Image (tube, rainbow, N blue to C red; front, side):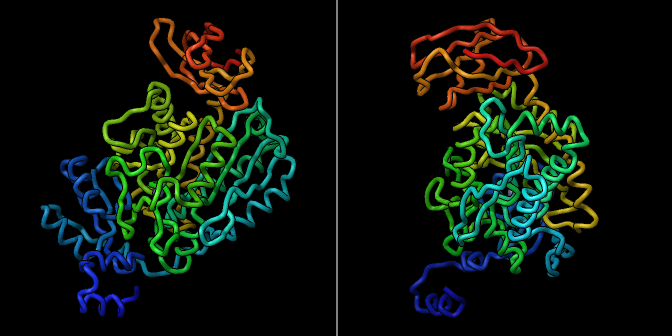
Length: 463
Ligand SMILES: [Zn+2]
């Protein structure tokens, strides 16, 4: 519905859209304000803001300041709630996007050239197609990149669920560049590449990004159905359950018509199902934080004793604060990391690169290299952690892999995890140092029991 027909419809009483809703039907944000609010009671007031379905751009968690993309009406609503909104006119930048950031077709070229130049360690995969028909690409980096080498752990790095977060693909491209160009000269890199299967998806939301290049610089969602869907609220786990997304099509956190409805969401879900990564990092911007599951208020992961310390460690390495989404930002439902963790036992992190001062689209020349360099120790640490405390192997004690689990308990009987074995019979359980009892079970029948002592290095066994 364009402006004229909408006005006519409203005049004729055919349409009950309020002025508020009308403002949002044009939510490509060109008419928005960038406003900042300092919160006195962070979690309480963040909930209020989220309740208004306001587009939250990013935060400065140290100073409890939140950046919002606001319509005039929303500014008034916040002021009425007693919040003082500081409008930042410098952020209303109407210039075009810095040309050095990458478009979908540039990403495609870079990946294909990488495959051409490093064919012995790099292979391009098409993992899906967007609603506008664009191909979504992944690059696999490993020795024998054509083969699925069962003995080698998989790890996933992905960028750009959200279209305006143009720095996020740069981090993925830097991972690719570091792993390929330094392969021959750096023994550590060679070790990581030869002994793991490293998957990188530099740009998941290809349609949304094209829309950003076409002039909607603050576009966040994909472009499906015209209004688009926030693909990082569309994953099936706890979809739409804890006020961590919106049911309104105009909202920037619209979760979609059904769980997992979006082609981009499905592309990443299929990839994860096929490769079963041990770790994942999903890159976003901005706020300089590391987020680990779970996303709904008050919830923590069953294996929090393993995933939270690793999250804090990678946060410390790059100077970012680490926590759950509800601790650091707000409740989130339907996110990729909660789904990966719950469905396939992946240990996943979101890293929000760049600070509030830098925002979504900082000067490429000034901030690109600084940002990717700062982020290197985090992904390198996850690559090295694949060799760290834990146990990897295959089940040989039964042919009936379906319904086979490994119950992991500490020696004192405390439950650590019920690990569901992969369909191939493989497993990779990340642990802390210590003594554990592994009980292989098919439904309730105990197939084998083994006690292991985990030291600094990963143990490879058969069960
Ligand atoms: Zn994001």
